[in-house]
Length: 154
Image (tube, rainbow, N blue to C red):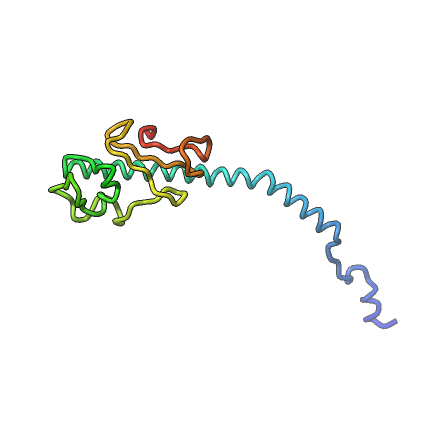
């Protein structure tokens, strides 16, 4: 026998791959892990959106208070949050409106679900109310669908 033939017959030199059964076991294990772990990460994403909405509302509240310091009143519901980036043309027209506006980046943020915040002034629960309807975009709800209201933020 030649040397090449002996080397080909040695068990150490045979190419070894994964069997179909081994691959299926790995796929099943990964599937089980994804089933139990993925929802936990999804909940974290929902929690992060809720935190962002609260932070946005707090920033809008601060901007509204600065607007009031300059003009003496809060923007009306009709003037809306737009009054924080553009000088209102309807009454009450602020006489001391800041030319830079009152919001960073001169834009009104949308809630984390890409919808407008609801602004009511005078508010039912204070001088003004700011509301995000949560993930479902409808009033009420629980969990990720729960409304995020300015008067409930500490």
